[in-house]
Image (cartoon, rainbow, N blue to C red; front, side):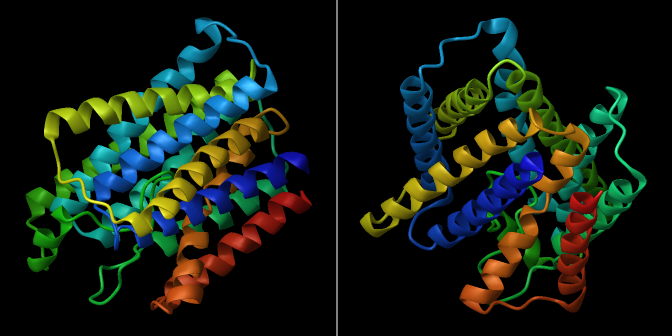
Length: 307
């Protein structure tokens, strides 16, 4: 039961952080949100590890999550590129299926969830895919986050793709491949958290943040994108960094108390949190199929918990 609570806590944190990041892009550029939240998360994770007195467990323990940090940058890059050339209604659901990788990894490692839990997994996964199946709509500012730690708002590059309502078949095929790559890469990130958490969950949290922060910094220095942030956005950026990094830690800890195959699915319901927050706080429209998906995902979570 503790694993379920921790995984759901991670999902709530990721969904809330993605929603808040999308909201913050009204006051700051996308790169300002990314860089600021990465820096905040790095500082926060370092303080937690130092104050908890957890020493360096060795490269043999941390290398999986260090590679995971690199994979997360690749995942986000592939996801945004896919959005820029393809349809969001196709790209987002594919990317949101990233929990399939750790689910299969858990089964391959010998985990055997009950029949009721497997039914819950199927229901939750289908619900998340439905929630993420969102077409870009005029007037909406918060989209569905198909990857954890990724602002729930389409980047500026997507605007040009939206002008052409029907991407070419070639671009759509490329977008599907990129979305699949994003899903696989983010799935490997979650597997990396599990591998390092077996030695130390807090170092799993810190190691992943160190890796992604370094790579994002290098990319930022090379690309030199627009960086703009109002002073009023700073508290929100800090909150995003703490939510995302804290959620990473909760997920890592959850893998030490339960099956990776189940924890990964429970952690993957964060798009439901993002959509419900956008609906409840901003009154943004939720399509009927998304509401059905949200109900289905929550029902799946209940089955997993009951099993």
